[in-house]
Image (cartoon, one colour):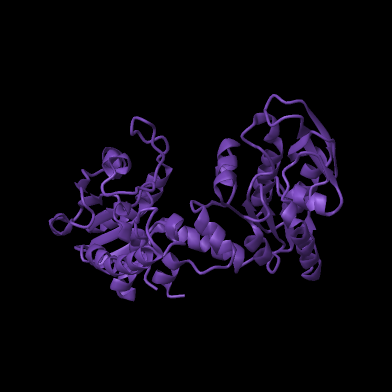
Length: 418
C-alpha cells in the first residue's frame, strides 16, 4: 500500500478529501478550526514536495444546490491563512476542471461543498409525496449519475489522498468510490487518516493486555453492537453513564426516575451472561450521584445505584464507583473510552467523567495506550485539559464506532484493499 511519506508529489495534482465540516456561528465565522488544522500536515507535505492540491470537503447537510448557508467559501480566508498560500476557490465542485488544470506547483484549490450534489452521498432528493415507483426510479437514476460525478472529481488529479476519517464509514463518491479511479500506487491515506487507522488497529488487533474498554452514554440500544464485539476482545468492560441503570434494574435494583430502557432488560442480562462466558470482567457502578431534578442546581446525594429513591434520578457515578473504575483502568495496558459517566455538561455532575479521564491519563503515563473517541468523550478530555495526557483522541465519531463494532469502513477499504 502506498504511503504519503513515500510518495513524491512533485509536479502532481492531488485530490485531497478532508473533513472541513467545522462549526460556524450565525455570522458565518469558524468557532473551532481543529479539523482544518488537523489536515495541515498532509496539505503542507504535498505543497512542500512541489505538488498542487484540490481540497474537497462537505459541510453540514444541504438539501439543495447551492445552499449558501453551507458554502465552503466562508472558510476560504481562514484556510488560506493557516495553509500559508492564497487558496483559490471553485464555486461548483463538479465544474472545476479548468481551475484544477490551471494549478501550478505549490498552489491550492478549494472546491465548493461536495454535498451540494446529491451524487456525493448517492441519495436521491425526492419530494415527501413521492410514490414507491418514483423512489425506485430516483434511486436508480442517482446511482448512475453518481458514477459520472465521481469520474469528474477523479479527472481533476493525478493522485488521491483521503484524510477524512470522520467520513470513512460512508461509501460516498469522494471517500470511497473515487479511489477506484486511481491505481494502488497513486492513492493513499493522509497523515491524519494514517494516525486514526493505526490507533484503531492498535486497540482492536495489536492489543497489549489487559485491555479495558469504558462504554458510557445513555442507551444500551445505541451501543449493543459495540458491546457485543468488545465482549470478544477485552479483558475488562466498564459500563457507565445512563445505560448502567438498565443493567441495575435488570439485576433487581431500584433506580427511581433514572434513565432506563425497559425493553432492554433481558438484553442487559444476556450481556452479563456473555461476559461471564467469555471470561470478561464486566464492571458496573456500585453507587451514584442522584438529583431531585435534571438541573445543575438540583439537590443531590450519593446512594447505591440499586437504591435510588423514588422521584430522584442518577446523573453521575459516586466516589466508590470512581475508585472501582480507577483501579481497573490503572492496571490496564490498552484503554478505549467512549462515553461519559454522567451529565458532564453540568459541573455538579462532571466529577465522575473527570475521574475516569484522570485515571486514563495516569495509566497512559505508566505506558498504557489509550484511545478516546466519540463526541462526548472528546469533549470531556478537552474540558478537563487531558488531551495531551492520553495517547490518541479520535476525530471520527460514527467512523470510530463502526470500526469498534468490527465493520469494514469503505473509505479505508478503498485505499487498503481490505
